[in-house]
Amino acid sequence: MQDTLHKFIFEDHSVRVEAVRLGDAWRQTQARHTYPPAVNRLLGELVAASTLMAANLKFDGSLVLQLQGDGAVALLVAECRADLSIRATVKLRDREVHDNDTLQTLVNPNGSGRFVVVLDPPKDTPGRQTYQGVVPIEGDSVAEALEQYMLRSEQLHTRIWLAADDQHCAGVLLQQLPTQGGVQSSSCSDAQESWIRANHLADTIKPGELLATDSAAMVHRLFWDETLLVTEPRQVVWRCSCTRERVADMLRMLGKPEVDSILQERSKVEVSCEFCGNPYEFDMVDAAALFQPVTSVENKSVH
Image (cartoon, rainbow, N blue to C red; front, side, top):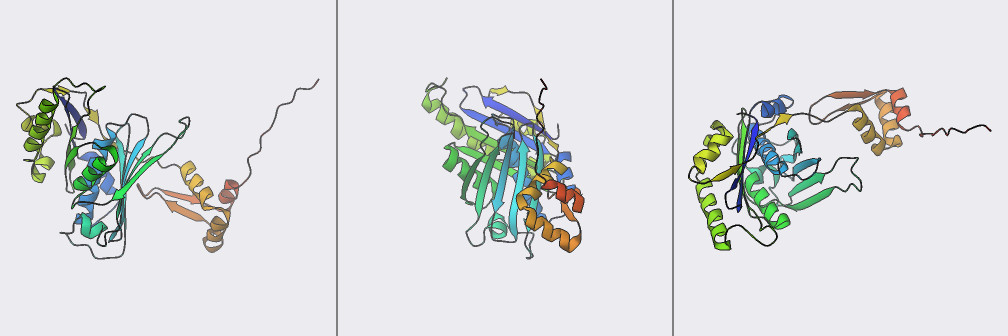
C-alpha cells in the first residue's frame, strides 16, 4: 500500500525494521516547489528519513531534520509529526546545480555544513523544552549522515537505505535494539548475529527496487526467512501547519520597528509560507493590532 509506513521487530527483539514508500504525499510536497533534480532527490530522501525516524516518537510533537551548508543548497528541511503528517522545503543560493551533484557537493563543499535534528513538543506541553542535536555532515548521502548522527548522539547502531525520484521517495531502516532492563530474550551473541544477518540482507537493496516496490513487500523480500513481529501499518500524509496566528507570532518576534519599516516601504506586510506557499497579508491596521498590549478586565462584585 502506497504512503504507508510498516514496522517490524525480529522475533528475538534484537532488531527493528521499518520501511516506507511515499507517492501522493511526496508529490503533494513537490507541487508547491520546483527544484533541480539533484536537489529534489536529496529532499525526497530527507522526507523518507523523517518519517522513519518520527515513527518512534514518544510524544505528540514533531521531528525536524535540517541540512545546513555553504553550497548551492543553504538549507534542506523535512518535518514529520507524530501522526506522520509531513512537509518540507529548501532554500537555494544562486549557484549552478548539476544532476550528478551529491550531498557533499550541494550542501557541504567547504566542510562547514551541519546536520540538525530537532524534537519539538506541542506548545501546550507542561515544562515544554525543545531538543536540538547538531553534528557535522558526514558521509556522501543523507542516509550516511543520519547513521552518523544516530551513532554520535543516540548511541544506537542504525542503518538506513533511501531513494527518491519525482514520483516516489522511499526508505528502509534497521536499528539494533538495546537490552530491556539489562536482559534480552536471546543471548548477546545471538543478538549480534541477528544484527549482522539483517545488515547483510538489507545491503542487497537497490535504489530502483526501493522506489518500485511496496514497502511491506520489500521487507518480506529481504527477510522472508526471518520470523518478524508485525505492528499496525500507519498512513503518511502531506499537511502544512501554517496559520495566520503563527505568522502573526513570527512578525511579533521580528519586532515593531522592523514591521513598521516594511509598512513604510510597501504599505503592507506580505508573507508566504516557505512550505506550502500559502500567502498571508497584514495591512497597517492588522500590523498595529499585533503590538497592542493585552489588557485584562477583572470582574468586581459590588457590595
